[in-house]
Image (cartoon, rainbow, N blue to C red; front, side, top):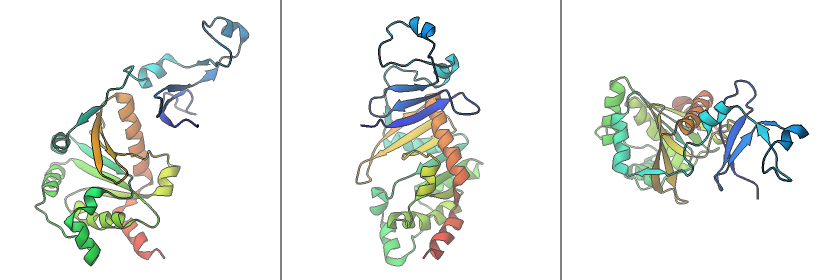
Length: 250
């Protein structure tokens, strides 16, 4: 069975080698570097067996990108703690949304209204809108990139319509076609990044229910998510432009 590898990082400024990857199933770290092939060099290696390979990588690669713990211990938080992050962040909160739908949206009365009328209602006194209006009014940035299918699912169309209300309180919501997200190498994960130093990774079950929220502060991991954010923002288009594209699609 083929490995499920995820890129961790590289110190290279040119061609991406050397680099580190991790196996999502076994949690092994895969080191990509320059092969050592000289017989005299190989003869100096201890415990070097048949079928094994040796590569040379700079020490900085391990220091900057190697796991800092021998066994990762996820830090999971409850929803109340998660909600407080939207009040305490200092300058930026940003999300990548990749699912085709969310159970919480389907359970929302606004979703039923959208199905009935084609338009979701807006309550400016809803707690989310009140807080985000306060945060953006204080000069902070709140944004998202949503990955959408072609054609969008009903749930994605609901969020596309609802994004009008998010924009009214200062959120910057952009869209990216799934095929473009795949070409850009974006992870199939949902997460928030706060102040480019903390990631809240959201995990869902097969029915789109939120299972748990993991906070990640390890610098190399946070940088990986920031790289994904930058790529998503580069390729995404503003909500209004995407809505116009959807409206005129055959």
